[in-house]
Image 1 (cartoon, rainbow, N blue to C red):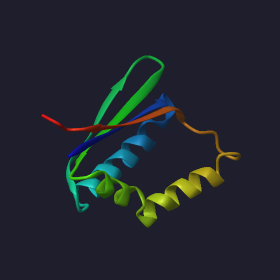
Image 2: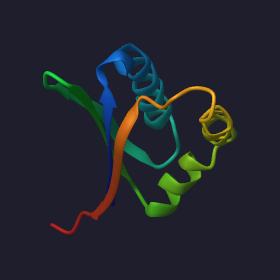
Image 3: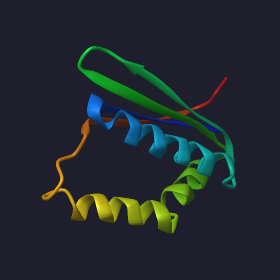
Length: 102
């Protein structure tokens, strides 16, 4: 089993957009083959918000299959296409993968 995390530090004005995005992502993971569990954690300080997606998968391949689903790839294409006309609300993104061994 593996645990995938991705932490997004975002500008406060993007909080509602990211709440909707992460809610949709968690729901899509939970219903996806090979996903054991998925949840999103949230915190904020006076300047920024942070969303941490945490999911457990039977295998790395299962997680990669979720990343490769057409709607996810399209979201990334759209974001990349609009990056010059619309500034990003994302300040930082950190993704990590852990293997469960105990």
